[in-house]
Length: 326
Ligand code: PAF
Image (cartoon, rainbow, N blue to C red; front, side, top):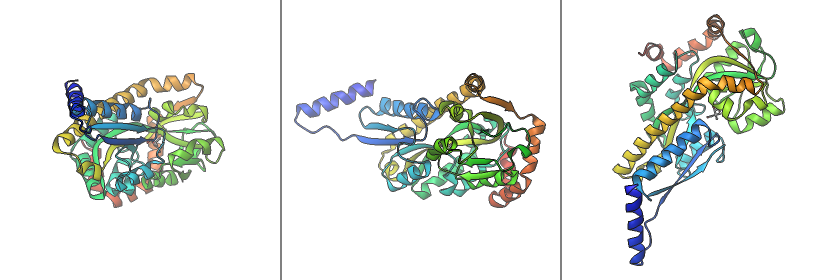
């Protein structure tokens, strides 16, 4: 508040002397989901904290619901400096920083606490730091929750139930390898095409966390939900490197604080939807089943071949370090 008043007073003083007001920096922030999703909540918190701390130095323009295109296009916009900020899934991040793919390995994390501890710890920090070498700056790891399978063909209990299932995956080689190994027919696709492809029957299903299934109302186009929790879905708050380099040290510190608060808001949203989401989707008419520990183990076994590939790509030591992280 103090900063806002100070900012207004400064602007008034400039106007009184006939001087132009100081230029504000526009932050265009794009994300794939609606304002009332976990991404929208985080983007609003980022803006709130930055404005509180800096007065009138920045203005935010939000482009929710893929308003600036798919996640890959938005990240490329950040690299070009035409978009300042985004919140994205790990869907295409491995195309920019290949090491990121290690977090996309199925059955890697025990639970949300385990995933958050790894992302906030030294391994997460090290990978976040690598974005500076590709025209981006990673502010913080966020999250979506554990991904589950929805489809229109049948309930899923065993790997047999996914044979030939036309399932949309993110444009992510780690996920693609797992669904191929399971015997499904995975189709990598950018998010903006998914709903119409489900409506037209081009694909039978898709996989996403409850945060997405509930906020996008996937129940309107999908009959079955299998709580498979086959993979954790990290997200990232990213800014463009040219934008980041144009900030002074105080402004950088403010964006870092704001990102930490945005992540807390996002995780709070995920915690809430993880406890209420299933009931909401049942009320909306979805047929829901949860994989038992034995059923999950059968899926894990079905992707043993893909795991060999993950060890080769990311190193067994690194994968083990994540699995055993306390
Ligand atoms: O499935 C995806 O592509 C992502 O999870 C989504 C829905 C775009 C959110 O980042």
